Image (cartoon, rainbow, N blue to C red):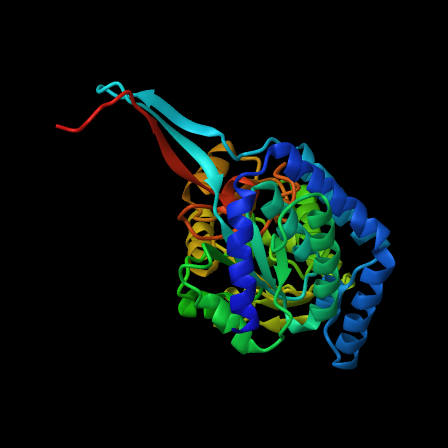
Amino acid sequence: MSEVTQLAERAREAADALAATSTDQRNRALLAMAHALVAKQDEILSANEQDMAAARAKNTSASLLDRLELNPMRVKSMSEALKSLSLLPDPIGEVVSGSRLANGIWLQQVRVPMGVVAMIYEARPNVTADAAGLCVKTGNAVILRGGSMAQNSNLALTRVLAAAAAGAGLPAGTIQSVESPDHAAAEELMGLHGMIDVLIPRGGARLIKSVVENARVPVIETGVGNCHVYIHSDANLEMAKKIVLNAKLQRPGVCNAAESLLVDEAVYERALPPILKALEEGGVTVYADDKTRALGAIMRIQPATEEDWGAEYLDLRISCKVVSGLDEAIRHINRYGTKHSEAIVTEDYAAALRFLNEVDAAAVYVNASTRFTDGGEFGLGAEIGISTQKLHARGPMGLAALTTTKYMAMGSGQVRE
């Protein structure tokens, strides 16, 4: 039997046992996991340094290195996220709806665990802790398959978290990672119909596309983020500059960072020069249309191609286009966006409402940075991903997204005529 199949069988057994655990049991396990991360910090950071050294030797980009790196503050942050999860209300057992039918049967729709959740993800080891914590809280067993770049980090985190969960009384097999870095292992995981209840890919466009096209198990599609900031003709330009710089520069290698800037032609000559200069000072290369380049505001600027309008750079790059107004901005975003996070900067209430209602995305902002699309920022605790699809879950996926429902019917001898 292959490694992946063995993991799935253990996870299936664990899921059955987890369904019978109490909220208190799972919360105690989360606290044990949180304390273990800090107690075993040296082991985790040593493993991460092996991954960082290998990545540096391959001339990995600064943005990817930032996503890969762990340090004491990031370990503490993972630990605090697990503690926060233990304080959140338990969705399991929540009554979604209830009514007494005409025949006297009392019918309730109740939240229950998914069962076995699998994740295939790339170079962010904090995803290991977030996914494990969310699954424990919701009574799901989890199989993790991280990218080869973070292999040592992910396996070290899994060992620490799994041991802590088991020590707190949860079944063995609750938290597991695929050790094989071979692509064949990921393909096998995608094909375990009947053993995996849901598969969540988290990473770049190529990974997500591969999982969506090849999986034989249900998939929740998480988001590639070509996120836009649109500066409307009635924008506060100082606010617009602050929002654009935060959305692009605060952490450029993540999916909710801004990749595209749209500016209304009524204000572009005033709005763009200070923004472009600040972006250039921050190391950003701008890929722009003719009007933007004609301003001559910066040196680090290139002609935009059709591919740039739809690009998720995850780097110090951004596309920039002058648009004729709100209508063109909405059309552009709905054509080139990835339905992740979109923002408008405006003082015009009617324009803000149109943007909120007509832009098709999981999160739409007025006068705020796209960087807020995050489970923690939305009050969901840690997140397992940001869904850009429209079935089951959309946006940051917290606890409720890892549940399904069942109907529970209480009768008194009713039979159907």
